[in-house]
Length: 385
Image (tube, rainbow, N blue to C red):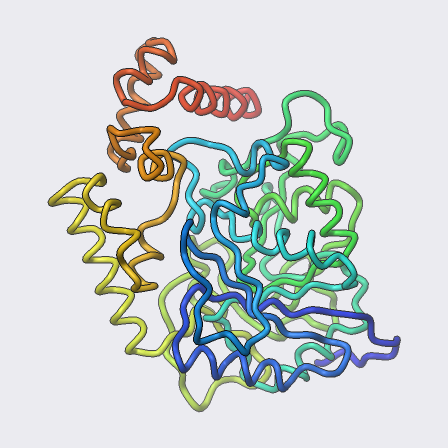
């Protein structure tokens, strides 16, 4: 069931996000742009590693291009900080380019975020019109409380400020909220709140931070569809389906995995994710395997030496940036970045009773990075009681 738009339209931007540039993805963006009514502006949002250049192929495309260096602003002390655990994609920091855009363009009333592997089996203008009347500050999918899904692995990618906070005073650990956010719409008030929260010291994966902070700050959360507790009655079982308590949300139309390939006969007016062409899926698998083999055979140091010379976007996606990677490339940490194995070694050393300086010397990382990791663990354990 589609909700009619009775109230007047407000200035809205659609941020189509893709770090890949292929003819097919360009056609996707152009179709999305053509579908936008006059009050909605479509912009390509692209994040890239430090030192990357704006793609010339998109020179005539509305583009907001931002690198890792630009999004890791010191104004967000906990969200942008971190040692070997700071990773852009799997760390849940894909909201930082959105907030970077917001800080430069704060005059929109609504901000849509749509990842390139999201499809709508209908007309995008129909999808946008369906929510014109919604007053939600955060409109997204699969919204639930920690009590409804207590074993979700992303709960622990969440950090609160040290000391009392003004954005969400009196917050308690059991008040966490979660969502699945390859597509979402945020109000200007939600953007202001998240910007203030990250400045105050909140941190973590966007699929916990946004619903948790906004809900507990008194803003309105609403599910796009599905069958969850935050879905309005007139939208229940519409727009998408998935399985809440499965780690990948499968089966359903809107899931984390497995990949879906475009087909011609999909259920109408449904969101689908992740949708990629067979060719793109093969390329991603190839570059993921090559990245893993390079790290296994030569170590992270050699792999990251090659990173700035690689122009393949699939390779860049799987060689993600962390504090240690940046420190190595900038000459501040000649011993090289920590591998995933190194992260587990650090965990063991911290549990053994060694000091931050001893662990840092053993792992060839700054002692302050070790201290941040230890402090984060302490906050997690204290919150769990």
